[in-house]
Image 1 (tube, rainbow over the protein chains, first blue to last red):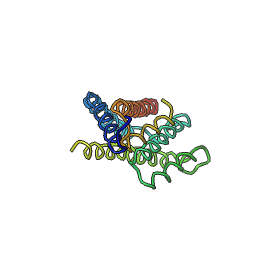
Image 2: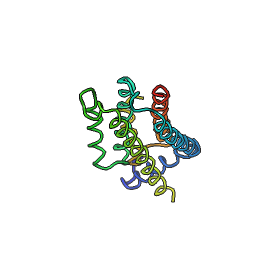
Image 3: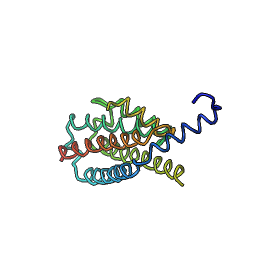
Image 4: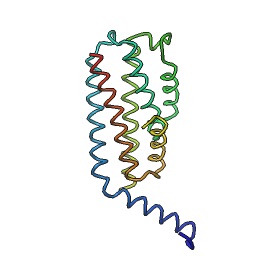
Length: 134
Length: 45
C-alpha cells in the first residue's frame, strides 16, 4: 500500500480483515453453540461420576485438559489474574499434591475451574463480538 | 494443533487481529478439547 498514510494503511488492513470474516459467521455461530452444548454435557457428566473412582490416568487427562483450558481462557482475556494462580495449581498437580491426592478435592477443583474457564472464554468472546457487531 | 499454537490463536482473537478463518479454527480446537474431556468422563464412569 505504497503512498498511503499509516492511518489509511491501518484502515485498509482493518477493512480487509473484517471482510475476511464474512462467510464465517454461520460456521462460527455453529461452533459456539457446540461449545455451549459440550460444556452443558460435561457439567452433567461430572455430576454423575464417583470421585473415588478417578484413576491416576483419568486424573492426569483432566489435569492436562484443565490446564489447557485455563491457559486459553487467560490468553483470550476471559480470566483475570486469579486464573494465573489456578494455572499454577494445575501445573503443580501430581501425586503428592494435596488437591491431586484427595479424590473429592480434586473433583471439586476440576469441576469448578473447568466451568469458570469455559464461561470466561465464552463471555469474553461474546462481549468481543457484541462490541464489534453492534 | 498444539498447546502453544492454540494459546497464540486465543491471543489473536483477544486483540482482534484474528481473521474469520482463524476464529473458526480457534472455536473448533476448543471443541476438540471439550470433546476429549467428554471422552475422559465416559471412561471415568
